[in-house]
Length: 273
Image (cartoon, rainbow, N blue to C red; front, side, top):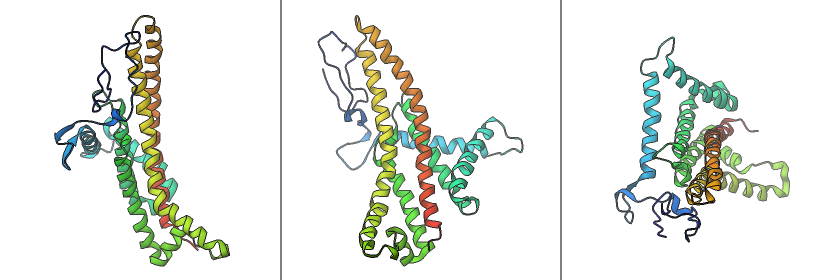
């Protein structure tokens, strides 16, 4: 059995159970792609993941541009859908965590993040694409770092240098002798661990979801031989179940990502005594 590490579903189409070939389980090779342009060994190249990220940006921008380029008092279907999504993020996430007065200026950022992350997740179940961009750690990490930069800069702007350090380190003189240890732990948690865990939540869920869908997809084909056909049907049913479940997880992870972003920004803007 050949194993081309650049394929999403690296398995031979003529390989089935009882044919003497082992089950071609998915792995890290399921997340690697040949460059569409350039050389993968060089610093400049363009692959499928990058293409999906670019197309996702175009889809999100194009959708909202088409919905709001000629806004109507009585909205049409497209404008109504766009307004519903925008209002859900604005009222259900931003206002709920930061309040209307403080949160209004951050609505465009959070709305953009939500729909971009959601679109990157949705590629997993879209035919021909069939790959969640956020299952490649670099993408959620960059988004988490963007939130991190906003949070840190707002903290310094709101509280000044000394106040920001107290915010990051959880300074509380009532802790007495334990204060240095607590400050060290809080600084490590806030300044180093926070952006990492923010990215990992999104990455790990989309990585695991893609592996499961690929696993049952390959199994459905692999079992399609002799008595294994009955098991192939069960495996294909699991593909459908996992796809529906993944739809829920994709939206949920976009929600959680921006909810945490709002929480961090709210913490930067809050008054500390």
